[in-house]
Image (cartoon, rainbow, N blue to C red):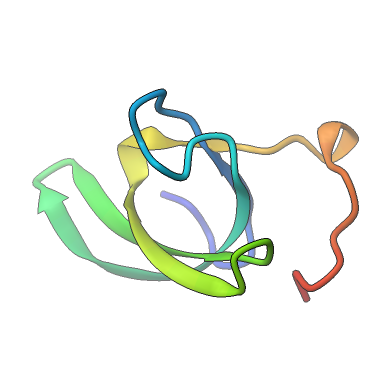
Length: 71
């Protein structure tokens, strides 16, 4: 399960937010029994979106760009 504040990347080629980096700001229930809706804040969009946990991947600290607006 993803913790609040974790930096993640949308990792699904058909998702409209594919490749965007965001911060986990909440959890909003189950999409399926083993897949949770995760509320992600995307600084580049200045919005939060619900994204299935199954299409998110962790962003490693060494691969990150600037974090402006992510705090």
